[in-house]
Length: 69
Image (cartoon, rainbow, N blue to C red; front, side, top):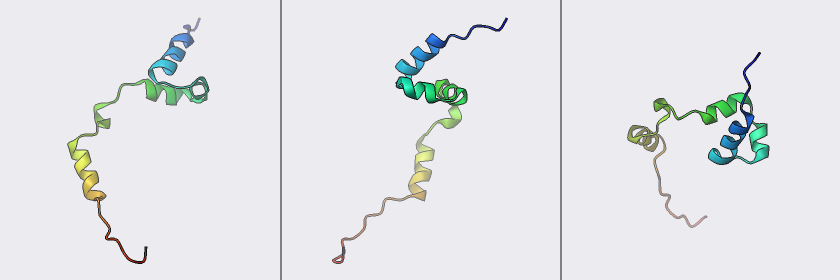
């Protein structure tokens, strides 16, 4: 006999911890829900090094005001 799946606990997690609406919860695939339920991996962290890389790739540039705007 296959183990029972605790749908009520999963639904409670989706609605309270993930703050999903019922329709959002039921539209998720099992893979999507699994990814959302996992704690973030250390590889997914966004730190100072990643921020610096983004700043170098996409610098903030102020454009001068032109008369022909």
